[in-house]
Image (cartoon, rainbow, N blue to C red; front, side, top):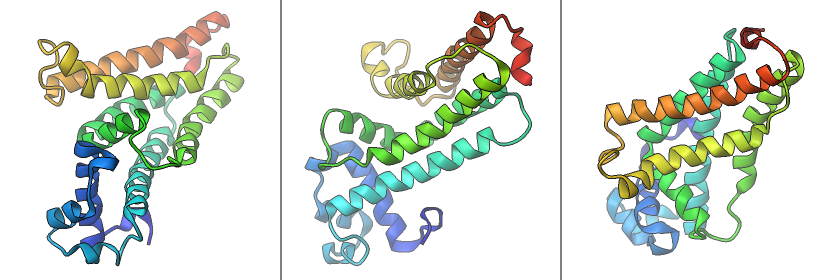
Length: 214
């Protein structure tokens, strides 16, 4: 079954597991809690997943699959590279807003709350899609080289911070990060960072910014 064709009990298990892994962490989540949330017996989980680790891996894989589709859609078409990157950044923010649990899981992973072997090859492959796109654009346009990997990791970090830590550090500014106006603030900020990095590469190469459309 393809990741995008999930259905029935399997999908409900994945959704419930995603919420619990985000709220309680991998170590703090018990399979019987997931089963109770879905409304099935614990034994029923093993018809779909061999273990808690296997279920955790499936939750990550489903999130990566949707992220890959988001990237592919944003980078298709005839828009300029900077316009595509703007669309991709905005789409990524929308995806985080739609699935905030995934960002919490990512933050927990960064603190070591995950089983051994975090399957980072999937994340690197997805980031590599964007890095390759930016690198190819730089070669074709003659733009100065920028660290595309650092830009992409920076975007992920900024978005994660805004929707997890900002409400704690600056509650007067981001008391409700999912509120529409705050979401738009995050989009404006993150897209401006990406655009400035890419436009700066063009400028440092002595190329007019309009060349980004080539």
